[in-house]
Length: 309
Image (tube, rainbow, N blue to C red; front, side):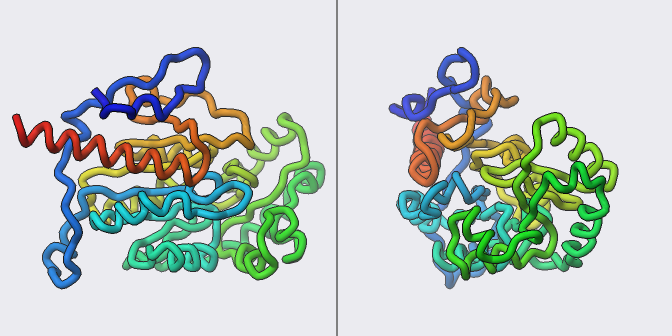
């Protein structure tokens, strides 16, 4: 069974399905280490027991204010246990590095531009593809391309207006290497045609919490797999709120779909019925904090149960 009070934190919002049930104890139990002593290099070099991958806007960051302080208790707890938190977002490296510094996460890698780039991981030397991407977009049929207004079509003031960012932050959001977020003004049929044409040119179109983001190559889940191969954790947890997070949640051992009242709920995902993916009733960093703490409590309860026979 889940820990006391755990199931009450989540509502299964797809259709008329009941609340998520139990999680298999045998599959999800493992020993969580206490705080790591930085002087102990053997421990520091050991594979982590758990790595947490997290989307930002609408997940770890509040959709309206971009604040994350409601998640501070869980972030502090993860830090005390030596558990890496890998930010995974459509944001640029310039944006992510500032957030990592603010959250004291600079020692960990991060996934940028929807998976197209990774920072902070040895051996990841990528060639920027933004100029090529913009040329491909501009070469598309006008009836489709004019429906998409990307950050490259906007000045910093307009990016600030559509995102709610400050002008300085908007400039960092425009400093792109691999991907192009933007606003779609056409209908669903036109969007389908747009995505088909993009796909024929090797371009992925992923819908996030606010923007449709175009890029070549890998997704957040692909980048997650690269980081997992390098860090070799025993378990992975992923949290997100939007369609472009689905692959990330499904690739993790345990996924959390954080409530976002600004968009219709996503349909039921594979893994929800078995409890491997759950949904929060609380939005943004509040839901993030509750979900992470509940998962850590569950793991610790399983460890305690197993140690006492």
